[in-house]
Length: 460
Image 1: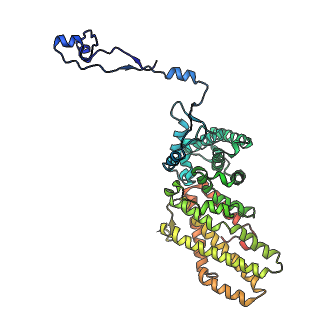
Image 2 (image 1 turned 180 degrees about the vertical axis):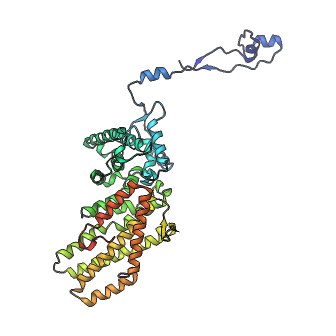
């Protein structure tokens, strides 16, 4: 039993090895001998209960404490302001021993990997919330276990990966499928998190196959199907932000409207309150969110321009003028974003061959620069096609609009086009040097931006 009381003799009698009658305020032996009696301190003998508890909980992964959540709204607001994790469920899981999976994940999260793997802290800010949520959902636990098995060791060639990684990956996929089939679990934040993590594992496990895009498509479908009302906390909102680039690329690939361009999603992502995680967010992650907010209408504009080029209809002059104005406004915003978000962070250097190279503070900054300049070149090519179409009905109007926009966008300026092409190649090469797996989805996205018809043929 824990806390069994032992003999309570005074310290003087203990040192003199005398029997103590424990009278108060002083014992009789001390009074008779003229010693100062120090009094009595309660002492306890503690017994190690770990063996008994281990046997008792041998078949349980967690110990559950049941709590009565009778907290006032004022107290809840205070706790949320302190950025503490509050469990909405009546049971709080707690590992008997320190969580080994959480410790391994924190190690991987802080690892500054280069060469092949993508630094997890650059994927999104939601990773900081994962350790506190382990043990709630089997899909998340298995996904984290899989990514830890990848990041905890030096990776050989893709066809020489340890069998354990493939085993963990197959297990994680099965667990995710099980949770998605459950009528309750499929909407949980932890299930979404597992769906976000597994495409990262897919890039490593099946580097030369196309399953990555299939997993990504499923994640985007899950993001949309859950409904906007579920992104009302830091964890879910951070996961949504981390996938904005993939959502945009998906819309370009399948030539459909980007669902985040609707008014309610715009309000949530770009016009809502600032979350605490965004205050300490990496600058490149914040810049990425701003860039996607500018480009969110690009898939719709490209599809509309392609439709006008392939199947012109009555009244197309006004629609073409509207498209030209929309493309122009987007190009102006992209240029402003580059000047404010990208240019101040760039570091120019000269290689041994004498050519200039640009260094970026991290991978996301390089990806942002590559995407922004590719978007500008796509817009410029679309505007040239639209101006040509407009000139068929009114050459003077088209010429006037072209001259006005050329002064700002430098349309037809061979030097400006070459500079943008150089920036795209330089940024892509930087990303490829830093992380081979990060270059794959970037190259994937660039190729699909070029696959939307004649207005967007390859430029590099």
